[in-house]
Image (cartoon, rainbow, N blue to C red; front, side, top):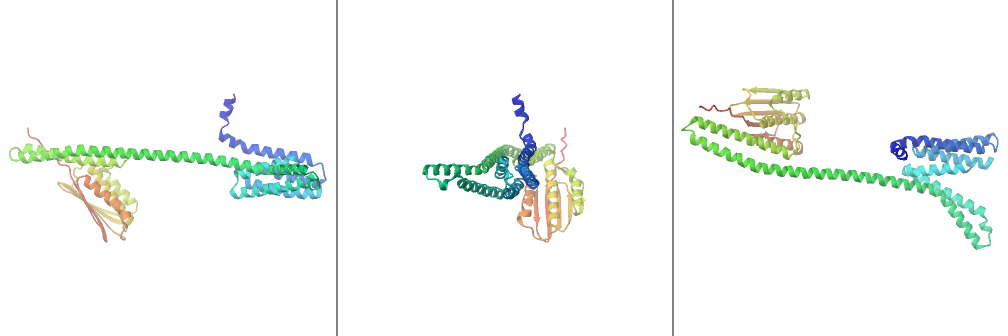
Amino acid sequence: MFDRLITWFTPERRVALAFPAEIALGAFLMLALMLDQAWRGGFLAAVITFTVAVLLGLGVALHRVRPELALASLVASGSIGVFGTLFYGPPINGFVYVAAAIVMFGAAAHGSPGVRWIALAFSGLAALVIFVTGIASSGVFYGVDLGYVVRQATFVLMTSAFALVPWLLGELVRSIRNRRQLSATVATVSTQRDAALTRADLEAERTRVARDVHDIVAHSLTVVIAQADGARYATAGDSPAAADAFETIAQTARDALADVRVLLTELRHTQEAGPQPGLADLDALLDSMRDSGLTLEVREFGDRGRLTESRELALYRIVQESLTNALRHGDGAAAVELEWGDQAVDLVVTNEARGAADEGERGHGIDGMRERASLAGGELSVHDGAMFRVRARLPLEAEPAEVLA
């Protein structure tokens, strides 16, 4: 039963129940003060007692959620209480000290730095008043016994020091709460650091695997290409069909080598898995650039030839990066030319440059286009001037040769 109660009493429910409990405590203090003091004097004394009680009850209810208002209520009730004490007798009792202690605790535990220092000043002032009043009423100045004087002064000093206890307890609660928050922050940062180190280790491992696979597969495919080309030249005169077959083998190996290089590049850079855009998505890309505000002129010559998946991706990314640069750094217009030949496809993207772009703005994109073209077995050049021009050439996949039986 007790375990169930502890489980049900979660921190969220504690926070939800705290404010109603504080209001109930404030109302209890208010009623206790009113019932105890309202009968002592006339109507004005009762009004003063009621006002002090309402302000103290409000301060107790707000000491955690709005400590600055709680402190203001305490100061106001204290001022009215001093007025009532001077003219109608003390309209306060022990409940006032309980309410004041709660408000001072809340100001130190939950208030801003300014509220905390103001609460400390009032606590110190209350301690000083208690000390001076205690010394004056204890008969210390009239005592002839030194021991009696020391005992009375010590007792008064210890009594006045209790005025600082609520503020000190509030500071203790604040420091404990801040330490817990700091510990939680340190734990979060440590977790993020460990995750970053893990990602770095995984990236390093991926790079190592990519390098090893590249060394093995690229070397093997290079040997296959060299042997196939050599056999094609050797058999060209004796058997044209065999020469065509060796040419197909060499071209297939070249395409496979380009694909392997692209895949290993993706492995090194931790790109997201999933289908990559290709030639079929090129028209949708051009339409999206038009929708983005780019005035685009497209001219395409010849029939679209066969490209490997890696070269389709390279062509798509080069067009995408070129048009993005034109949209960002150009005058809002660009032209795209695609010329499909027998052996390769030529791409030219031009746009009028508004001004010389910083190297950091376009340099990485241009380097990426060059790397994609190179890995796909092609080439790319950039002319940066009044007219910004990107030229790319990617080889087409060879038609499969018909081997005669």
